[in-house]
Amino acid sequence: MSYDIVNPDPAGTVLSLRSLGYSVEAAVADLVDNSVAAAARSIAVHFTWHGPESWVAVVDDGTGMTEQELVTAMTVAARVSGQRSRTDLGRFGMGLKSASFSQAGRLTVGTRRTEAAEAVRTWDLSVVARTGEWRLLHGADEDTATVMGQLRPERSGTVVLWRGLHRFAVPGMTDGDTRAQKQFYAEAARVEEHLGMVFNRFLVGRNHITITINGTPVRAWDPLLAAHPSVQRLPAEEVPVGEYTARVEPFILPHPRRLAQQEQQRAAGPAGWLDQQGFYLYRRNRLILAGDWLGIRGFRRDERYNLARIAVDVPAEADADWAVDVRKSAAVPPVGVRRHLQRIGGATRARAAEVLSHRGRMAAREHGAEFVYAWRVDRRDGRIRCRINREHPLVRAVLQGGPDTGRDARALVRLLEETVPVTALRISHEADTVDDPEPFLGAAAAEVTEVAERIYAAFVGQGRTPREARERLALMAPFDQLDGFWRQDRVDDGGVGSNHGGDE
Image 1 (tube, rainbow, N blue to C red):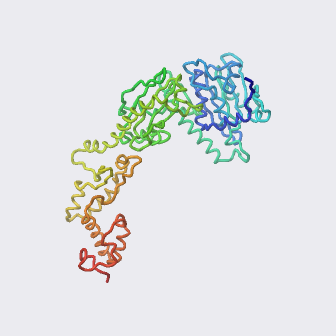
Image 2: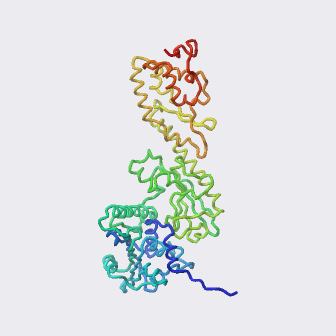
Image 3: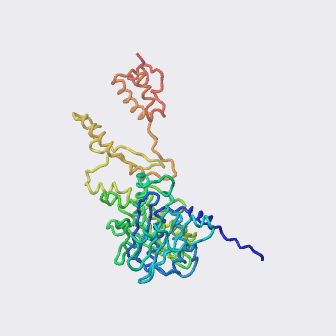
């Protein structure tokens, strides 16, 4: 067949790569991947503010590259397939370029092997756009060379430098823009948290690597709290994925009240308890997806499952099966695996909810038999009920009356204010159902009327006329939704309760 050769326009390709949706933290993580693959033991990330001339760099002490290897590494999609080393965290051969183009207009890489001359190449996107050609520049401009000289490793290693940062190299930006400077360093803080999570398995152990952000060591964050003595580790399973297997291991985190305040904050993670629940997909020990229910039917984020976190270790050979994207921040499980994940995830979610729901009873046993909660929350006929515990000693004292009833009542009101069962209500609530408590649901009319009569009497006793008392009662929840004597314009003396007498 006849055919046309259709080469993509370089400027259009660059624009597409810029629009892949990288966050700055995901982009920096892609650069760190390359450093890990190069057997680096120390990786330094630099954020330096100079207004429109601000820059970001990643420096490692890895094996470095030859000049030809550097040119290959700087070529867009140079490697699509082929055997990769055990430490290679890449997939498409796009990470360095796509991550860098998403953040900066100029990408310079300097690299050297031990006792070899340094090789330097630069992508300047303005040159690509102007010439319409993939012109990979030799060396770097004077300002860039000065920065590179400050960062150059003593022996082997690589420097990746971003200049012309898209969000900061804008007209009108100055070094003195404190708001932009604050945003710049806020991004550095997010990068620190992200790297601690993504590379947590590399940051610990005997042969751990060191990552710093502006000289501050990145602290590993293990979302599974595997080293905590109160974590429940459920049985791990080997799930088949085509010719390979994925290892799935569920973890139930301790109830937050079993953690010190600082431990609670750490356990919540960068996104908070609700957004960190779910599956954690690892590929060659590198975290790909952090806290996601992977679109599995019926699995939604819910406060009841905050303690459920499940590690899924996938071999790099199964990338295509899991649809790992170029940013290494999204994945879709294969159809054949979803039923296993649904089964394991369902059991883990149930166990996590159980830990939260039984916390009250565990606390009661710990504090002794005389310890009683002021509130009771349960579910009946698909509806949540929230009741004051009439067996609580303070409630009983108020109901029985006595010389200290006033003081008891004030103490009871304070206790009820401080112990509203928010957590228990969250746990009892079922997603996608209308199960909110309904006032006086199933109660006898006489019980509703008795409560209303006491409120009515209180209004009258405080100086309201009978009409005003009824009008105010009719505006109060839940009586504004119910029918009763409070909706009558006038009530005869012989009507419902003599204290509902007519207007004077």
